[in-house]
Image (cartoon, rainbow, N blue to C red; front, side, top):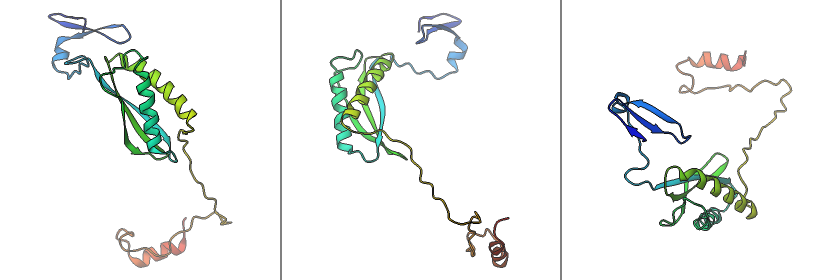
Length: 176
């Protein structure tokens, strides 16, 4: 916040623009002030690796790189040691971790993320830990008619109230 007047409040955006907001709007809106009560904040950096990776090795590499960065990256705070959690856990094609560290202010998170991501990328590559690549298995049928097989019998629970004789007739006629 830059200035608060009787009718409006001026807020300075990260892009250095000043936004004028009527106080009536502010009174009816929920605001989050990232500098109160303390400007320090936790920074969560998601990192995904290949499913074949060793979780203990990944955790060690992430903590090691973040700990080294404490000395050189401005805005990264030394008062709390960086740590890793295997959260959210198992992705569709990956093991998903979260590196958690502290930054001095809301604005510091951008430089810290930038530097940590570059360091993590290089270190994971050097350690032979691969990043996930989505993969799908496609099965090709040798059915010469290219028809999709239709089940010949259905249980009452699957037929949605359709009489058994109707379901059998539908199954024998195949798809239309």
